[in-house]
Amino acid sequence: EEEPGPGGKEEAAPAPKKRRLAAGERYVPPPRKLSTGVSFGTVHFAETSYYFEGGLRKVRPYYFDFRTYCKGRWVGRSLLHVFSTEFRAQPLAYYRAAARAGRLRLNEEPVRDLDVVLKNNDFLRNTVHRHEPPVTAQPIQILVEDNEMVVVDKPSSLPVHPCGRFRHNTVIFILGKEHDLKELHTIHRLDRMTSGVLMFAKTAEVSKRIDEQVRERQLEKEYVCRVVGEFPEHEVVCEEPILVVSYKVGVCRVDPKGKPCKTIFQRLSYNGKTSVVKCLPRTGRTHQIRVHLQYLGHPIVNDPIYNMEAWGPDRGKGGKINKTDEELLKALVEEHRSKQSLDILGILEEDLNSSAENKDCGNSSDCTKSAQADPINENSCLAKDTKDLERNDTAACPLNSDTNLETLEKNKELGSCEIQDGQTGEKSSEEKDPLCVECKITRRDPSPKELVMYLHALRYKGAEFEYCSKMPEWAMEDWEE
Image (cartoon, rainbow, N blue to C red):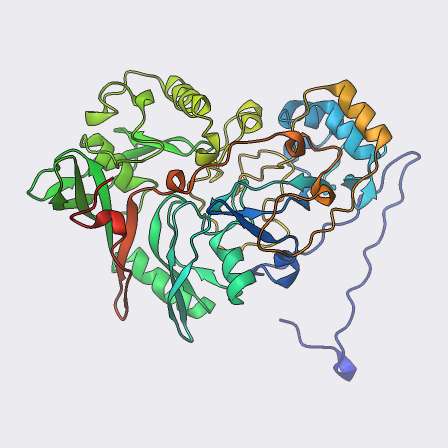
């Protein structure tokens, strides 16, 4: 860093010289220097509050700004054209109404005309009424906390950090809001539906030290799961390569073009219907244990992706699917739609209607971006973007009727959405938004049982540490469904 100037005060940077604008030309301010490595803090945690209902942790709907700089491919296109081609989860009437309500801003100025042509370095802000899916009300148990580490037992259904539709219903936000544990560094990740040992470093130095162990394969990981059928008594090694089918839905499969993987399996018990299996992954691919178990013909009993009829009569055993990737995804979505359980996948109908498939970590099951993400850029993009690390789902609800929306926007003003702290209770009238159709939709809540998957990270061991959790109840030898 530069030393302060004479007098001990930091000298202000010289103001950039403004180029003389041609008649009618729009001025675009230079890009702001965004702070890197800034964690989520008190301001972010105070955006909304939790309440508990029916064994679920719920987030009160809240207003949220999605922010992004103009993408290169948008330059020279009108804002209206960008919305119509890349933000198709919402009709254009939504954006017209949002602009009139002051929710769309360009370089911090309200957008008055959606026909404005975008320029390089344009900064866009979209204020939406955000709804998050419920997660289990099971508390996060802190296993270890010292000067260097925080180790927790993560419940199933909770993402590690903000990703996709989840922000406050994440481990990072719950630890910050309820345990005052802030500025944590993510060392590794667990799928949203996987429970168990999850480690955070308190400093960048500790994070770097353990990360080196991970890269050098010095970290031993042990998982336990309950699978369909009688798993072989002898040790089973699976080294089938794994390919990502969809980042958005979060689906992988065995494929020769996939990344190399290795998992060692050892049966612990068999109750006549299902087996408890110890899993020792030697690599860390997305959904590796789940995909390998499916390939072996013993999928996890309640896996909401890899133990579904959509994979065919053999449920994907031996890699036999007999469907194209597109057909498989469609079948999986239809199966969950028929059960009203799309929320288990962490997606909504509008997610499926939006633009082209992402190549980021936007699936709800896992998200690899560090919790040290820049809070400005977390979920910052106004739409799906293939180059961003996060899915950046705008969460602004699609509206079925342009006419109804126009009428709503003209007759009602933006609600203040004053949110009160509280442990129980449904959404209050202050939490309803006149432009948000999600507020008018009644969705079936998942049951707490639906939010549990029988896969648990039991033990993590490094060069100078070993952290374990208790064996989950469903993994006990005498356990019955």
